Image 1 (cartoon, chains in turn yellow, cyan):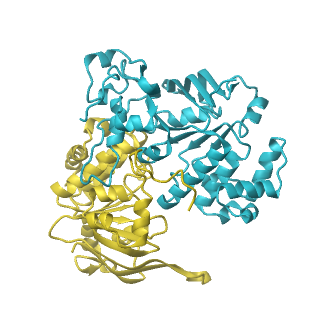
Image 2 (tube, rainbow over the protein chains, first blue to last red; image 1 turned 60 degrees about the vertical axis):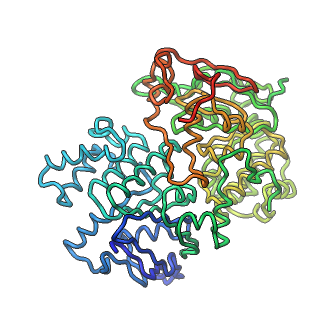
Image 3 (cartoon, rainbow over the protein chains, first blue to last red; image 1 turned 180 degrees about the horizontal axis):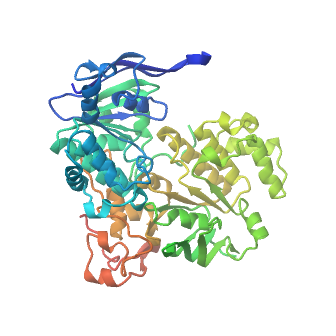
Length: 272
Length: 321
């Protein structure tokens, strides 16, 4: 298991002023198999704990109880070299393609630096060579993207570069928190497709965190539905969508507008 | 008097940039009858929001409406004096903003914001009138005494809808009114919007990028690309038989619970408005492009059923591709 959560619980609050403690995550189990690449979608609305889960997986937060493990070891116990190896093996793509870049540097830096830091390249020249081949993995032409500043790229290009950066580091796991919610619909499919292909070609597992059940279904092997910090339903993606067992999952499915005007979604009916 | 709630003719909006004039909206024309719901869709930068905000003359420098005509129930918006425009807004054309979170005044109760609106238009408010408006969007009368921060996102957006219909405008402009809301709340808020719009007898222009939502909400759909309205048609026709290849690509890029592991996106990027191709703006990404498309800009092709598409091949269906 490269990454695993066991009975993870996260609480916020309390502290100096003794405010009420609130559980953001309650007893969550999540495991990515080491043998084969897998796509797990974590679906939930705001406040469901999906971002807290992302932060646990990325080692940005420690569980209040339970464990967050990498290769069977507590993330909090990793030191020096191991921590670096973990940081390379587990990569992240965040929601905001505008906030993930430093606006004063050319985008190349975001590819060159990690190549050096993580020892994929011995010198600047090797790192540059690696950076030049990276954009192709997500269907971008290096000539259109490298050498530019973030503001000169579209949101979709920036987001795909973030994916390219993550993939260049040859991770085992990619944690993507709402990677397509801020890009246009026509590009959304392209980014999801490149994520999907990467799991097949590069053999990496993907944790796809989203509020959108439709894209989760399009891409995932397994779906976890979260509500108020708890996993209320989990299982094979087809089973969860076709035969949802939890009322909340059914509610989420009903909330998806059928993309077909001949199917009545009940907008004209009186409110329930 | 016109029988149209809204009539837009050759609306053109430009933004002054360091590299020249960018034409964000290029000769856009459409009409709406009372009670009609139009969905304006397109990618970011396609001009859909600029078009919608132009209807209220809410374009600020460096943007400027450089040409065209906008009439709301016959009244000329672009020729209105500042005072006439002030009276027109909310009374004849109202806005439901994108971020309900920041659209309400945080230091006033909701009730006070209704009173402000009535006072600005010389009307009498009162608790009963406000309660009736709140009831029309499914909120309790007590909400009038609440401050915005005491309400959830969905409730705030309902208050915004109640404010928008308060003076019974002919046209409501809704700029992605549910994009900031959770999916379950989204459907409830849309229902509220539909109900309030019907009761007020208003036409709606809704801006959005979610074709799935538009399939359910709109009577007609207008598709924008690089500042141009490239197709406009009744919603069932446009989904069953899109005549512009870009429309087809938008429809096909929708994730669907019927199809799994299939991604049909659109390759390439929209052109820069400062550097548009000489012919059709969509030509560089178009699957059925021919030489003519690269040199000759397609004008509108009028089709049966009040449809219109700006493609040299609009008379033929777009084949799946």
